[in-house]
Amino acid sequence: MDSEPLQIPLDQLRHAFQLALQHIEASAGSTVALERDYFWAVPGDELYDVPNEPRTITIGQLSESWQHLEDLLADPDRAVGHHLVWLADVLRAIGQDTVR
Image: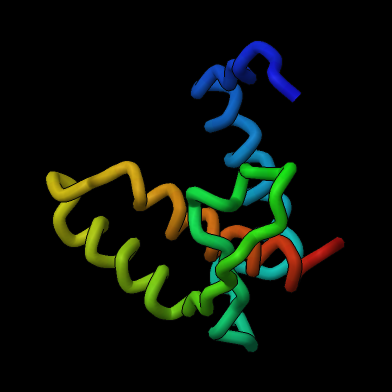
């Protein structure tokens, strides 16, 4: 499974995100409601260790992930890489709830 790292141009990622978000806005409006709050999560050190089944499954909470993002909006100077993980939690839930 060793191969060259996947190279993701951030401008293309930003554009793909913008297009997906525009699609959700066109179908759902300017706000989405997520009916479920808790989700299963695999810790980062086990998430991509595909040859081994995860030993640990934890519980995540969308409202907590969203609170971290609201905190970031209130104080952008406190941005850390993990904000992308919290963003991914919320985006996955939106994508799975609004499949169209």
